[in-house]
Length: 225
Image 1: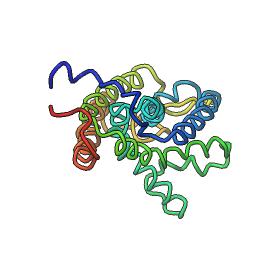
Image 2: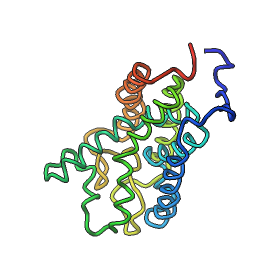
Image 3: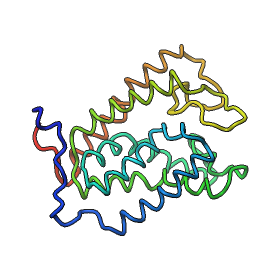
């Protein structure tokens, strides 16, 4: 890859927009409602979750029509959010698979806030659409991998471990302390779990998604390299 490839090609403002204006406005309106609602309900650290980062990066992608900004979150969350969607449908049918969407059916949480969280269901489809319209930038795997390492490190070293405190602020963000928010995992040393995430997420989730998008995206936005 040449150094010149690292600079994203600016969008040609004279070209016809590839993302419809109504789509941009609808997505922006949703984010304008979700962000302040989440800040009040969960606090600013909630935006360290991969899914929230992907949602806001998608907002930039649709306005700038930037392939890299669409491709990077697609690499990161297409597979995990597909699992979220399957678990949600299973839980709705009375057959939860992982329990990761149990909060969506918790009557103690405001229905409006839970409704906003339904973006986990449709966001992977939106990102797939953006990649289809804008093209896939093959640098996305490297960009999202580095971003995930930074986020995981922040969450592991600076954010609270489970169990949740009375203030309801997020704990165990991005599962850096184990698969449950109720307690820190105890089946291996904590640092080993953290290292497994740092290595396993790129190897098992990000790279396979990268290869899938390389194969099926409408075009390669980054060119050869």
